[in-house]
Length: 353
Image (cartoon, rainbow, N blue to C red; front, top):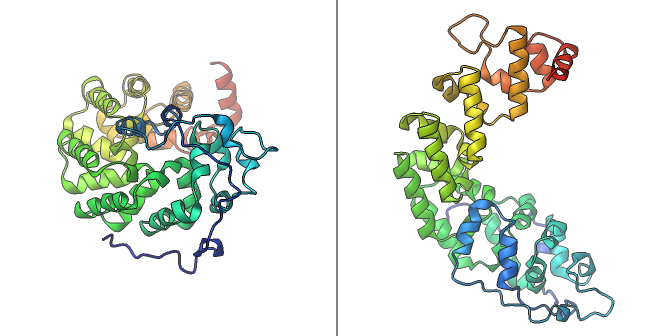
């Protein structure tokens, strides 16, 4: 059993979360969502979850036979606008109190139908309680459900198995909480798939167990991200950017988001830093966030320092400018503290570009 303290929302829970009966008699009659609608919704989800969710053998949501049957109230248009239903549905009212953004959900084809089928007491309460037990803060439930309303179709037993799996792999309670909070789709993925993904990272990057746990907790999305994308970026970092295997692992553990970047943009940024700015691999490893800096910021600031004759990033030489100071802070702070110039001069320089 999961070892975190089970709060059951205790004193912090709002009164509407207490046990009570919820009536659905005023809800419109809604047919289950079509598989096509669910696929359309999946296209809007996080890219790492698309591939995994599509692997499911069959959606539990049945096709809508006649969209007009969704509306049994003569004065409500069957347009799946939640505003038309929220006053009639206690379930929707509870979601609003949680902070769920219904406006975002109603833009996703098929999801309004799915949500309107749910009864808060029957279909949602225990799922929400489970989420708080594994570390999702009460104030974070709304954001979680907004990102992944399909969590309500998951079996609670399956979700607990997925938490127990992480415990069996010696993830700490705070690591498990972070994983669930930062990757709302994690609890929908089988332990078999997660195990394969963790094994892939461990084998590919020659990681120790603690390093795998560190990576997973630091950036849970990377574990479930599109595997082909991960492979392509690994090839880019190793073969095209020229980092050694141990350096590549260091880079991954420091800035795992680099593996989720567009491959061409990542390579282009590296080429600019390494070749144009003459920054070594070793210095990039010390300040890997330089590869995450926006192109225009990097080019504008480096260009301005070059214009002033101050573009010197070798710590062994005089007048050294640290890469961290180059990419951090506002333009005003950069101009004043790093370039030792004025915003008027910087603005005039930008006009020449």
